[in-house]
Image (cartoon, rainbow, N blue to C red; front, side, top):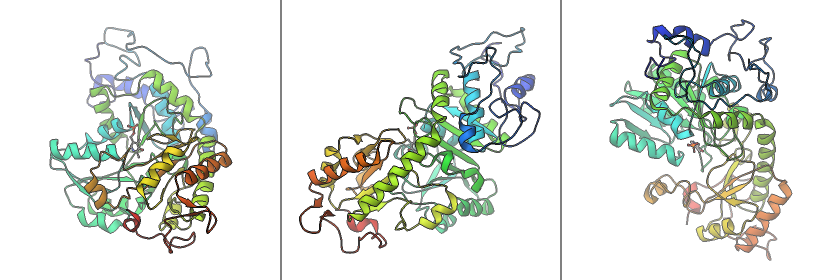
Amino acid sequence: MSESGPPRGDASATGKDSAVRKAFPHVDLAGHNLPPSPAPSSPRTGRRYALATELVYTESNDQFNASSVPIYQSATFKQTSGGGGGEYDYTRSGNPTRTHLERHLAKIMSAQRALVVSSGMAALDVITRLLKPGDEVVTGDDLYGGTNRLLKYLSTHGGIIVHHVDTTNPENVEQVLSSKTAMVLLETPTNPLIKIVDIRRISTVTHAKNPGALVAVDNTMLSPLLLNPLDLGADIVYESGTKYLSGHHDLMAGVIAVNDLALGDKLYFPINASGCGLSPFDSWLLLRGVKTLKVRMEQQQNNAQRIAEFLESHGFRVRYPGLKSHPQYDLHWTMARGAGAVLSFETGDALISERIVESAKLWAISVSFGCVNSLISMPCRMSHASIDAKTRKERAMPEDLIRLCVGIEDPDDLIDDLRRALVQAGAVDVTLQGFQNINQSPSSSSDSVPPPAASSAT
Ligand SMILES: *Cc1c(COP(=O)(O)O)cnc(C)c1O
């Protein structure tokens, strides 16, 4: 059967129903129709283990019982008859290594179906293909730069109306919701301002106002280890697999997960149609990386907490949901199981910030996060440079903001390196008050509520 045959997973492709069922069964190997995930990645008993166990536990029907799922580096698969009959035919439509990864991720993300594509932005591209001209999207004003860019393109080329509001206040979302709202797109914590968005409440008001509207959440910052947006009322969760899921910055991937299987089929359509499904080799790498998600994330998070406390105690305004001073600390902890490993802080002076970033040695100057090694960046100059300066200002994004993406190194080494960089950059007064931020405002002592973002932007 040629690749021009009916796409797998397309409900209209009646002739391929059995192949579709075989590739995406909704029962596990033992015949239990248990949520969330189908075999072969789930244990045969149908039992759900703790996430740390599920992350490493996989079952496959490999003919040689390979412990590591093989890479099916093949574009085509021979069919058993002229009418097809094979479970796979063409890798754009489906590949055993990719399917195994998708089932494994569905289990980990507590979803009925997961789809993996070539990058986080490809995941968003697939999701936004659900939209039609005239549809409205409600989203945040502190979005990932690439998300902003894609939405901007859709509004200028695709007839989509995009409302950017401060989603940290659900009332702002409520105000712009209408019968035209097709999608609400959320990130929490936002990046780099680390603002928290109430997924539960926004999902409730969105569905009440327009039952057909979809709530999609970008869960890249926390990963399924720390947050399950689907459990909070979201319809779609997506993540960049380039970050924590893989953990080593050696691949790019995107993951989409849903509970509604009909919605899953609609999302599969553009993947099969355009060919953005994750390659067999990258699927294998991501499968390998995700097994250590828990040990990596826990170490990264513990390190981030210590670093956040170190900076705050020396008079820097730190944004991190692990700190009680975070204005939405309580909200964050009603949704998430941890604070993650990305934090940002302000020095009060963009030039000083630049010198800190350049003086750090253990902290590589790099965009992105989620890798085992620690990274430092200035979002306004790097990852968010695609947002113009005027818009950055409107969104109260401080030009002196430094973002730290904490890795798994020894926390004392990381703090030592940061301390040295702060001294070298002239960011701290080492003579008078001990070791304190020279631009410290009187109100920014460690246990006070941080001042509004704009006040410290210079
Ligand atoms: C990196 C990132 C993306 C995009 O993922 P890619 O894999 O780089 O395409 C989307 N959202 C957030 C929050 C990210 O950090």
